[in-house]
Length: 205
Image (cartoon, rainbow, N blue to C red; front, side, top):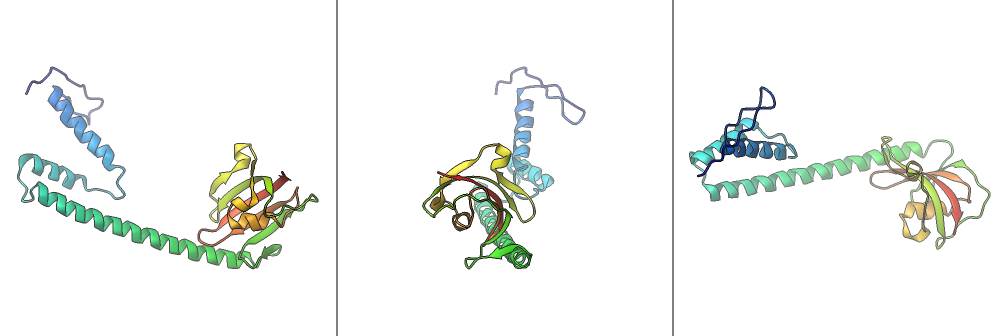
């Protein structure tokens, strides 16, 4: 193998001095793998990872390439199943948390619960016309989760939006038909993760 005279000086006392091209390729290959491992959904044991690499390079492992790939695929499938079960458990937890939130929220003064389960609260009552299901409306809105995290906001973007009322989520289609232009309502929309929207009806097009 032809080795070029390429050296890389250590950036700090933890980085080795790389004397030639092979040293550089070897070390930066390890760094690349290590940084990729930072994105894994679990904390890999660095000593065992390094041990596996060393065993493969030195042919000292009892597992050949084919056996390794077979075992690794099975482990991947197990990890994926565990992640799926974790996600399903989280979804069930969020659904139960949302249910409890709506039960408590529905008892507050000023909160109205419709037959569909939509809850709304009148923040400011306008005196303009009311849209129909087929209307196109212009609104400003601010969307949060029940933990207060903002996930979308036309107010923050500084730009209202327009859309056909029958082309959005059912909670908006139902709730906006209860509003007069100029009104500001808060919608609490089930079922899974409860979505909370402050909605201002600016106009009907």
